[in-house]
Amino acid sequence: MTNFTTRADYDQAISNLPVADQTAIDAATDRQGQLTKPPGSLGRLEDLAIWMAGWQGVEKPQINAASCLIFAGNHGIAALGVSAFPSDVTAQMVGNFAAGGAAINQLTKSAGASLDVIALDLENPTADFTQGPAMTEDETLDAMAKGAAAIPDQADMLLVGEMGIGNTTAAAAVSMASLGGDASTWVGRGTGVDDQGLKLKADVINRGIAANQDLIASGFGILSALAGREMAAIAGAVMAARHRRIPVLLDGFISTASALPLLKDNPQALDHCLISHRSQEPGHHQIIEKTGMMPLLDLGMRLGEGSGAATALSIVKSALAAHNGMATFAEAGVSGAS
Image (cartoon, rainbow, N blue to C red; front, side, top):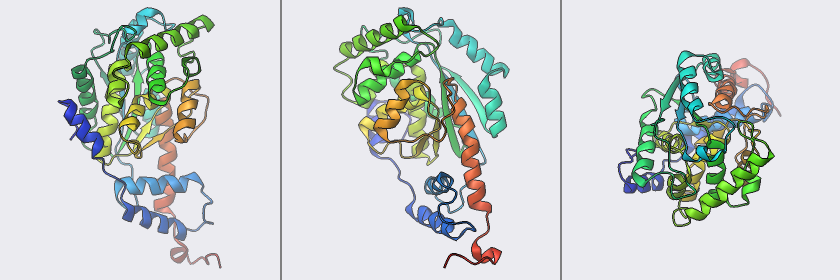
C-alpha cells in the first residue's frame, strides 16, 4: 500500500486509511474511569493513553520499540541566501548524528528510542522552486518510498525529525500553500537570519507559489512543488505508519509542515499523529491554530532534529505507565466516588 511506485499508489494509500479501533478506545476509557484517582485528574495523560489504545488496538498499549527517524536533504533555494548557514552544513550535521554528538542522540538515548539517520541525495539538491517544481513526480515518490521503507519492522511508535539547510523556508512555503495566508506571517528566523533575511524568505515563497500554481491544488502537488526530499520522506513515513497503525510524534515546524499536505488530500490523514512541541517558529504557531492539533510541550525549542519528539516521548510513556500500572478501585479495595 505504501510502495509509492506511481502516483496511483499515493492516491490509493491516502484514500484508504485505517481508523482507530473504537473497541480498544472504549475499553481504555472504561479503565481510566476505574483507576484509583478522581476522573480527569491526570488531565491530558489520560487522553494520551486512550489515543494510544485506539491505534495499537489494545486496552493497555505499550511502547517497546520507539523509532526516531531523521531525514536529511538539501534545497535548491539555499543558493538564494535564505539560510544563515551554507548547504554543506547538512552533510556535516549528518556526520555529527552518526558520531553521536548531536542533541537528538542524547535525547533519544534518554527516552529509550532507537535512532536512524537517512540522508537523501545530499549531493543533489532539489531544484530552485522559484523557477518551477522542486522535485519531479518520480523524485517525490522516491523520497516518500524511502521514508516509508525506513520504519523498522518492530517499531510501535514513530518519531520523525529532519535536517536540511533552507528547509524552514520550504516548510513555510508548504504551509502557506496548504493553509493560505501571507508569506510574511509564515516565515521565521530559522538558523538566525536578520530582518532582511526574513523579507528575502517571504519573497522566495511568494515567487515559488506563483511559479507552481498548477501543482498546489493537491497535497501531493504541494510536496513536489515546494518541499525537500527530507520533507517528502517524512510524509511517506507518516503515511506508512498509518497503514501499519503506528502512532506518530511529529517534531516541530518542519516535521509538521512536511505532513500537512496530506490533510489536503484526506482531512483524517493525521489522526494518528501528535505534535510533540510548539516550536518558536511563527509558522508552527499558525499550523497549530489552524489545524487544532495541540502540542504536548511548549519549552521554547526550535532546534529540529526530532528533539521535541524525543522529549515528548517520555510524556507518552508516563501516560501509559499510569494507565497500565495503576490499580483499579476494586483491585486496591478503595471506595470509589459515590
